[in-house]
Amino acid sequence: MRLSEIYKNKEKPIFSFEVFPPKGDNLDKKIENLFSELNKLSKLKPALISVTYGAGGTNRDTSLEIVKELKTHLKQPVMPHFTCVCSSREYIKKYIEEIEELGILNILALRGDEPQDIDVCYRDFKSALELIEYLKNYSELEFAVAAYPEKHPRAITFDDDLNVLRKKQDLGAKVAYTQLFFKNDNYYKFHDECTKKGINIPIIPGILPVASFSQLDRIVELSGVQIDKKTYEYFEKYKDSKEDTIKAGIEIASCQCQKLLEFGARGVHFYTLNKALSSTEVIKNIT
Image 1 (tube, rainbow, N blue to C red):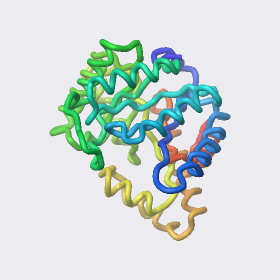
Image 2 (cartoon, one colour):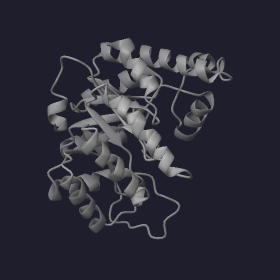
Image 3 (cartoon, helix red, strand yellow):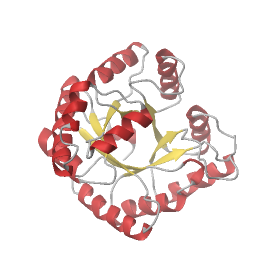
Image 4 (tube, one colour):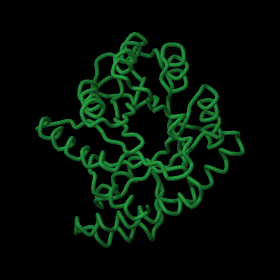
């Protein structure tokens, strides 16, 4: 089902999940564990499972393996990420052909972060906008895009960032998935500002149920995502207990998702970190 069809449904919340290709040592075991978690997620009948993809094709083979497994064996609707930074036009064209041969209908079109460990970085594409324009000419894929309730880190102003999202919509984007956030007020404000700009595609909140305090610290440090003092201190209270932190993460995310759906969000996109438990429990709590 294409994105434009998936988000026509306004009768019930639409849930999707994001996973990433494992890397490092014991790769076979990590992939086996991921497929086990994917099997659990598939029982929730998600609208989409998205699979991240390293800039410049740094984890191309593993990413495609996961996409194929989801599509052919688990029979799940899959949406590959499609990054363009450091990729040549020839490479992008070949990758389009590969995923279309698999029967993929949707992708998440992104610029991607510039990798540090490749010898050649092509400059054929400098932004997601350039990738989207190229995709429109060479494929029948429908595409989703990224959105940033707290402003993209490379955007000069919040308004500039909104203008880029409006351009993505004008080029044919069917839905936007937000970067993770912990303060719903930022999403509400962002959504209202989008409306003022004439951005009317569904803006799906991206939610991460926190599973460890050290993980939370890394996310806040690396992404600059905002978190209020009360929520941070709530997680800090359980930092020495993995089990209690997971429970707190489910509790906080459940409350966050419920309020977002009441506000009018069409669904939730869960950043699973390749684990099924927390997202599964949150969905049970809100449906």
